[in-house]
Structures are given as C-alpha cells and as structure tokens.
Image 1 (cartoon, one colour):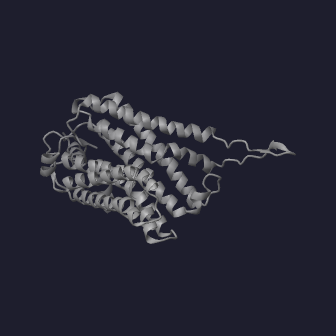
Image 2 (cartoon, rainbow over the protein chains, first blue to last red):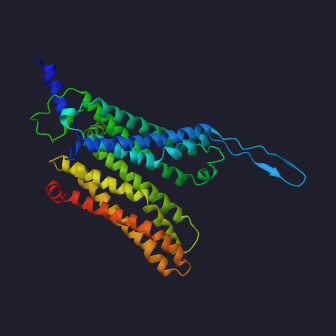
Image 3 (cartoon, rainbow over the protein chains, first blue to last red):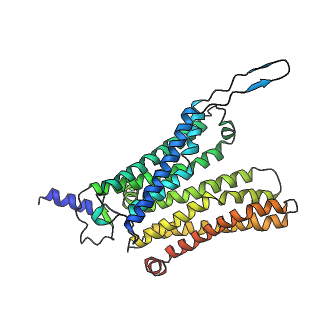
Length: 205
Length: 156
C-alpha cells in the first residue's frame, strides 16, 4: 500500500458518517417507508397538476337586461408556484422525511446496496427537491414584491409569509442532505469502518 | 476552516442536521403566530390565544419527530456529543413551551373570557388537547435524550 493510499484511508476514517440503526422489522419498516414516500410523491404530483391546469372559473353576470361573460383574471407565474406549494408544502416534506428515515433506519448492513431501497431514497430526494425549489421560489417572489391574484394577501404580510415558508424549506433541505449523504456513503467503498471504533451503522461518506 | 468543520460535522451526523431542520418546522409556524399576535389589535387574552394557534397541529408533530430523531442519534452513537445534548435541550424547552401555550390558549383563556361561546370552545379543545399531548411527548422524549445513551437505552 502506498503512502497516498494510507493517507486516503485515514481521511475516510475521519469522515465517517453515523446513521441510526434500530431493531425494527426490516421489511415492515421498508414497506412503511415506501408508502410514506409514495404518498408524498402523489401529493406533490397533485400540486404540480393543479399548478399547470388550474384556471379561475368563468364569472357570469346575469341581470334582467344583460347576460354575458366577464373577463376572468389571469394567473401569473407566482400564482402557479403558490398552487404548487399547496401540494409541495410542509405536510409533504414531513411525509417524505418520515419515509426517508424509515428506509434508512430499516436498512441492514447486508442489504445496503439494495437497488429498490436506493430507488425509494432517490424518489424521496426528488420530492424533497421539488418542495425545496417551489417554496424557495415563492419566498424569493415575496421578497421581490411579486403581483398575483392568489398571493396578494401573502405579499401584504411579507415577514410572516416568508417565515411560514421556512418550515417546508428547512425540512426538505434536511431530507435532501440526509438522503444524499446516505447514498454517497453507500456508494463509497467500505474502507476503515471495521474495527475503527465507530458506532454500529457508521459508514464512510 | 470553521466553515469546513461545520460542513464536515453536518456530513458526519446527517441525522442530527435533519433533527435540527425538523425543529425549524416547529419554530417557523410558532414564530409566524407570535409575530401576527404582536401586530394584532385587541386585548391581551385574544393575542395570547391567537399566538397559541401556531404551536398546535403540524408544528407539534414536527416537534415530536425532531425529538425522536434526536433520541435515535443519541442511541446510534456511544460517544456523547455536545451537539446532541444542546439540540435535545432546545427540543425539550420547545416542548414545554408548546404545552404551556396550548394549555393557556385553549383551556385557561376561554374560561376567563366571557366573549367565547362554550360551543365554539368545545369544538377546538379536542384537537388542541391532541397537540398538547404531542408536545408533552416531545418534551419527554427530548428529556430522555438529554440524560445520555445509557438512560436512553434503558428507558426506550
């Protein structure tokens, strides 16, 4: 082994990430994790569909002399993002958090390279990324004093609206970090963990 | 160098970072409710009652999840780190605060206030009793995490 390899191993030992390992039924925990991630994905997908397809109902003026259609207000891009965050909100972030944690916690050392579980974690990361991007974009729009029929009230109380967006942004960012670090540590070769004195479940980053 | 150490620490304990982020999921709606209550016109009782709405619902659920994540982190590592203890303390104090706000806002204040109809009060009490129970659970779990790995392993 060259000096460079030894240095590489010592650096990996220093950067071991610790993941929780709990004695729960692996299969049951994984199924619950998949169900939670799937429900979060469906909720976010519903928000995406609503953001793309929603339009205000056509207002109709009806009186004794005139019956006709009025111009309906147009949705701006910020309104569409606001509609998206109805699906991609704090509840979806919490669902995907619980799903990702269950998938990681229920994994055993022998099946860490399980591609199905990795797929579930990638879906969780994608859902968290949508929640993060949508809520961050809405926050930026509030700061930029964006106009829209659906966001007028929120822009008026800007500080509270931005504070409220902090919850889904923080949770989804945490989930994204958790999943990415876990997948990166699974992908890395397992040098330096055996006998290194780390906790059970410690894997190199 | 300090930024590198923070980034390296976060990458080493991603579960702890996740617990901190989840606690923010509690703190953000609570801060929104308090901020709106401060800017509200009206008597102190209605302001406190309005502020207490931010501590219920999903906020208390986030607090329970954060407490359980901290406990999992405590159980995962035999090495006791100050970050885990600090976060457990923050979550525990938040849990106690949420219990107090829930009790004050939805049990004590409506009894004092003659303007709150009993029927309206009875409608909201069950959901906020649930939120108060979740906050109490969060405080208990965080207290377990604060006592260290030995106590957590024995008590969990």
